[in-house]
Image (cartoon, rainbow, N blue to C red; front, side, top):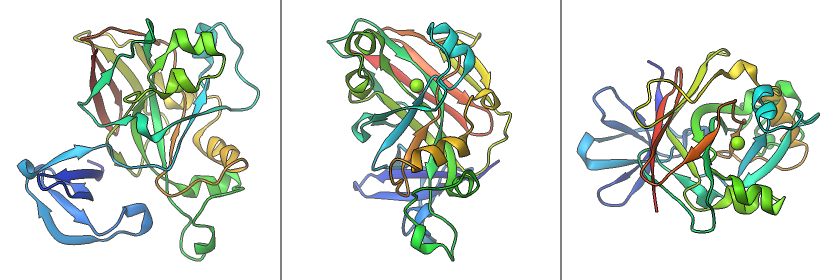
Length: 265
Ligand code: MG
């Protein structure tokens, strides 16, 4: 199994980055691993911590309509360049936390997505630890790892506002995690399940993206500086659908794991 990089809060409210072991104990790093953090001799026993979302980004940059069949189901063409929007970091919740259904909306959708975690460039390029104006080749090098996200969206407000900030920006609208892995197969399958359904609502290979990860990161870096720990959401495949209070939604990506959240009022 791939190494699982986590962020945890101890029962004493201390927050650490760490490596999750098979026995569920956590080896603690002295800094975020994408900033060169090293393992310490602190080892947290399974019942002494809870998992947080695996990073705390300065921003979440998301991409709309990056799968052809999803653009079709939205009744729109595939954009000729990546279509970007921001989600505030306050949208982030961890695995098994509650998505809160906002009073302002009557149509809230799930969007299962692959999330990229940005690191820095390797030693020798230390001056470029903040990522700006990267070629796709350099962009590939700054993708530190991968996790799972749910780009929860108030679809009615997205249509009503034209701008997407409100529809995408409610607290709890970015479940993220449960951990980060460093490697991912280029054909990895993404599936989203609602409640007890055995048949996925969404099922696609990440290789079906219109603009692949290194192109997205390069493109975004022409606009804004990406900081270590920042998160890129790479778009959702076909099969989006609505959530109701009481629902459970689970996004799985082969080689990472699964991210599961429930919906409350
Ligand atoms: Mg999305």
